[in-house]
Amino acid sequence: MDFAKLLAEVNNFVWGPIMLALLVGTGIFLTVRLHFLPWRNLWYAVSMIFRHRDRHAGDISPFQSLMTALSATVGTGNIVGVATAMVLGGPGAIIWMWISAAFGLSTKYGESVLAVKYRETNSVGEMAGGPMYAMKNGIRNRYVGHTLAFLFASFVVLASFGIGNMTQANSISAALFSSYAVPTEFTGGLIAVVALSVLIRGIRRIGMVSSIIVPAMALFYFAVALVVIIVNFEAVPAGIAEMFRMAFSFDSVAGGVGGSIVATALTSMRWGVARGVFSNEAGLGSAPIAAAAARTDHASRQGYVNMTGTFFDTMIVCMLTALVISSSGVLGMTDPETGKMLSGAQLTIAAFSTVFGPYGKLIVSISLTLFAFSTILGWEYYGEKALEYLVKNRKVIMGYRVLFSLVTFVGATTTLDIVWNFSDTMNGLMAIPNLICLLWLNKDIAEECFEFQHAVVEKEKQGESIDYQPEDAKLS
Image (cartoon, rainbow, N blue to C red; front, side, top):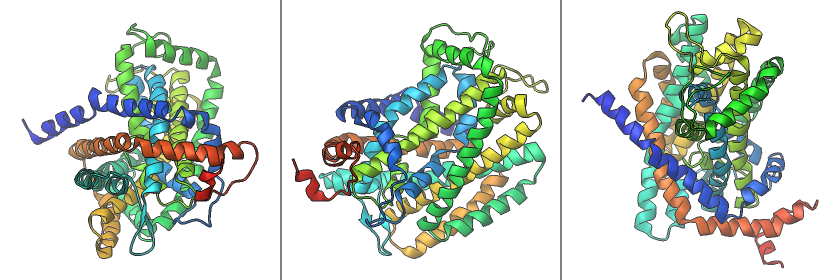
């Protein structure tokens, strides 16, 4: 068996039913353990995004922290991943994406709470946090905690060069080359230069740039997607009905929407959960690294802010892509040149082209470029903080920033089949120590959640403005 095939089989196992069950199962457990408060406080969490807590310890504002996390999660999965899920798992896969995201809210909340609760200050005065610090400082069994932290940090560093770097740069260069014949070398060089100019300045620059790019790209994509949905609105009800029918029915063939798509309910569940987790990263432990950098008065407040990333990523952006595809009538179509069913970026381009014509290609190219580049920025920070946990030398950290930027050129100009599988495997392996930590420290998460609910949330929902102090928890 050759190495590439072996790696593909390992990757299929890592992202198989057991892992997906653990990811969703942990979300279900935490949702119940927290008395459904992440669901009940969702709109409260959204309102927290724009409240600045600049007097508190941290490197960036809560909004910038969320935008940094979103920059890493809102990526090619929202365009390519959704289209792939709808072809391989049928329209019903989208419903399972939503279901997994609903429980992922609690997972993302719990991860972020632990990240802020157990964060540290590094040698240059920046915040250092994330699952590795929660494992080291929160798990009382030092051997278990330090071992899990080492494994998690190692997987993050390895994944950062693949799933957060080369594969993203490759998506940009491939989209621009296939659509407009832009040389991959030119694209790769441009990405490397722009990335280096941002990354060399650290988290404050990343947070500032992300707070501009992420809202801009989200609004752009929301606007163009909404135009397609409105123009094709007559087909929207049928498209939504087909999603629900195929999500829960053992009927294997789609009806009017994507009539040639064949998928059982079990297949819809598998692809929906897998693509949902890949898109919003709830349970992988990456986003809490950005949460730990936020200026906030309580770990639970930032937990609520960062959990909205799952809501925006999967429940909004992914659903927009799904409605564009399902309402446009292109699902199940084949490419006349190859005879193969349209999937991935091709399918999304075809959907937008039903309204925008040749500009559909431009819309998807712009969206992919912005989404993928923002992912590069977010994942550099994740990898840097993981490397910082393993190696304290600041020269190594600065070298990582430069190397990370230069590697984007390699990703943009080479074929990445092996890199895709390797980085995807590392991405999946991150979840194992992270889920163990979440379950191990579930009492810590619950205590922070219930304390904040009593001392702050209930009062702020009644119109009071509370700047939490530790002694507030003692008030009856």
